[in-house]
Length: 389
Ligand SMILES: Cc1cc2nc3c(=O)[nH]c(=O)nc-3n(C[C@H](O)[C@H](O)[C@H](O)COP(=O)(O)OP(=O)(O)OC[C@H]3O[C@@H](n4cnc5c(N)ncnc54)[C@H](O)[C@@H]3O)c2cc1C
Image (cartoon, rainbow, N blue to C red; front, side):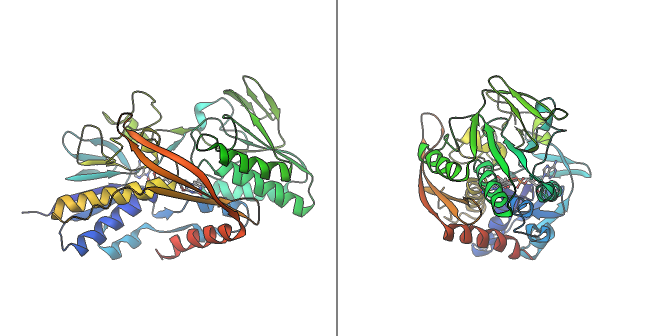
């Protein structure tokens, strides 16, 4: 009998962890399967490090490693563009052909919806791709004074902490350079990361106050006018000299084009049976990417994706080999971030599954604010990529 086929879509955080873990657990359990990863990029990129490139603390080559390095672990890597999933016939169509599977792991990230608001695509800078991070770095280096606005169009967005890390780093770095800069974050929501915890918001606002950063709440972005350098929302109109923007999250194209992958409640996301990270209708399809975190009740960040991918891999190998390898989704998730130029922020969220709602519940609190957290974050990020080289 032919060995089962495990197909992983995406070579980012979720895809890498799922493929690696399936390969490792199969070896440990002496099981057999054909593990294939399909991605449209020759690189595994560690995207949080793009911020470090923009702010001058990482070199571009430190942010990525060839995804083909997974072949060392026995994973077949195909550089193809996924176009559509056919879960009824258990096939995936790409620009180069068609692939059948027995198990499918989907981790295709999000599409950056710059077209969601007039003017947003044309205005300002961001660091959500490596090339854009380099441009933002150059724009910040050229900046000679004025108003810098960090714009969050909507919630939730990729990495809830990022705008607050960016605002405090930029404000402190400008101060150190002797550049007169007013820094403001224009965002929906009661305060920085308030969706996760009021305590988070309080601790971030304390740093904002120390550095003179303003938090301006908008009640629905309408447009950005790149010529006049103005942001318009229902309740505010904000002028800027330099704009740093966060992308609205939209469903990746292959999921939007596939039957049964778009959440009917909110079309930005792909639905998931959240306890086990499986497709609600197709047991053999695992949904572990950022596109499925909000419907699962989890943050749009690498940490829960990492554990969701790990958990999916455990279930797959357990089913293939009969080995009891399922340890479950962790009871705490810890995120670490920069808190200005020289300090760090660590938050912990306790997880519990709400059976009635069918999603995860989080209870989050601040676990540490000190320079050691920054050092830990830098070491973890850089070693993630170094380990693949
Ligand atoms: C500036 C920045 C800072 C961040 N900071 C943090 C942080 O501090 N902590 C944290 O936990 N998270 C952070 N994140 C978020 C984290 O990087 C993402 O949540 C995580 O990478 C998402 O994992 P994913 O596997 O779903 O998607 P991705 O990592 O985006 O991977 C998607 C993969 O799918 C591939 N792909 C897409 N479309 C196709 C297609 N049609 N065909 C084939 N392949 C395709 C892509 O090439 C890519 O390999 C940050 C992100 C950014 C940009």
